Length: 325
Image (tube, rainbow, N blue to C red):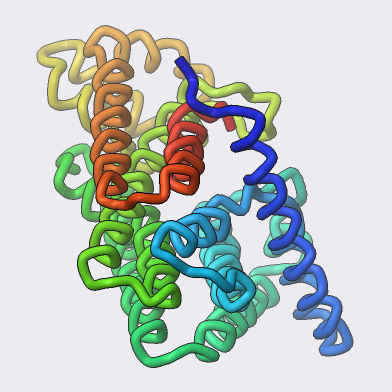
């Protein structure tokens, strides 16, 4: 039974609106700087669930923070940094659309896309730099891990020997790290104890891993009406968890055929790919892992006494793991 009530959804929407307004105001204040701000701002404001900053505000409250406005610059900084990684990811993946609009490199060329991504990174760091050294260190560490993991993912493109451990290391650095870093930083701003900082950092890491596993499933079983063709990750050569699991479980002709499909994927092979993944129960296995990481995430919250805020984070965690987009 779902734990997501109208009260939770209203709280998420309230936070999202506050974050959106602050982002819009910041971009408007810089728009006279020229085309780089126009292009970067267009991508930043092109939608997005704002899950990371919403999670940061809830983590801040759970850790005892009483002045949420002191967190806004940091939350915006994390969203700038996240958008910067998307701009550069789209270049690496040769993606044509993001959030329903053409990617920057598609419309304006590679050079301008790289610079727009760099501008977003610089602004994100500048926003984070308003805080003390501990915050700057958290941001620096997780951004470094994103770069390391991005290189590792590139090295594992169409690598049929990619192990679950390889996959997990990439996900921890590239996807889960920003969730973890955001929750950790929010706890620092709230003046939390070391134990509470660790608990919220662990929460972010576990829910971030679950987030990526859900993405893996949506790439193969999601609704194409959201704007992303199914199988896009396979087409780009990304070794997602269902593929890795199926390669491990299948043997003989089935395993050989799966390897051939992955190595030479085209959309007319999609149905056959799904059949092989179902044969190895790889979707079910991924769903089990999602639940396991969800359980670990919410267990990290048990030490906190504020049941209302904890309930909001529990509901946000459920939303992340049950989402359809």
